[in-house]
Image (cartoon, rainbow, N blue to C red):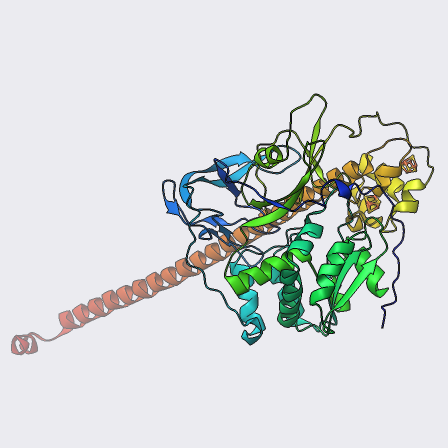
Length: 506
Ligand code: SF4
Ligand code: SF4
């Protein structure tokens, strides 16, 4: 039976430009001179290095351990020598540096000992979750959320539907399309494995209609246990909430999670990486990325994590030109970066070289309302814009700023050329910083109160001790006086005795 499809509000039909890169077989990127592995490649706490400079490491070896529940380890993506642990430029729109482990490859690409588990169905779901965590698997669709946390949510709740998201709706990006075409078995078996891990009743793999080859490749391998669905092309259908709405008609409540309505979603790349980790024992050390836009040979690459972005672009005929911009990600949601020194990390899906980026000056808002019409989250983007400019954080919360998925539809249609999404990103950052400061202030206040309580308690204990001591002193004093009185009395009594008796006594 065909699934009844729904739609989500707003959204856009935008030129896909996927044909630039999706028809060529992916290229295995040669080893770079340096591998730079940031300790923070995921949402959550950064990993903690467990290697030292000068140490030799093997491919797949853990070089930084997870530092909490929402954290994953980092593995060496090739064999070589650790030449530095320090701050390097990482994928960040502000060009920030962050702690990284740098490996000089030895060229052997020699593997660390790996432990494959062929029959994943025989593994207890909890143990499976642990294997996936130890393999450093995070959401490869761009979010970078540790996969084991989502699997655990699934185990603690009843999961009606597992959705494997192959809807790659941003223009230019075709790495999921290529991955599905080239490794359909990983996706199908990865879907089955995750279904086992979360004990889902149903499993759906979702694609858009502009991926016919990927659809055919999956169709060949799928039995009745998995539903394969094609959706009409619409941006941003790959967004978690939008895809859930399109497939099920259900809405994830504001501030809620898909699991609250019985759904768990993973990207196709995550499913493939999890399957590979369990059945081949290979941790997450590489991924597919698209290099597209104004390069001679746009295509998809299989890249070792830590490979510099420039090295990837060079494989596709990149040449430096005046007025060029580099975007990590797609043109709608990606980040503009000002150099190509940073490495490919777990969440990097595309390197886009363009000179057609928005250089028009912003004009005043004319209140046309077009931004609200296209907003898939049914927000009021122009109101958010005013409140973001006014730094009115209370109003921004009231208008559900944090439901904004930063899809960029509003900026795309704005006739005044206002880069609305940039205002929202900045406002979100400010609010989160304020919250951190606030919680820091709360912690300081709590510390102050506790300290005062402790001092008061200590003072009271000291008083009690002193009182006890003084009472003891008083008792001693009374005893001393009593003894003296006794002695005096005895002496007097002795003085009153008759001499005879006195002699006798002597
Ligand atoms: S689309 Fe631009 S000009 Fe129109 S209301 Fe929104 S912010 Fe204002
Ligand atoms: S960026 Fe945010 S406000 Fe703008 S259309 Fe997308 S979800 Fe709506």
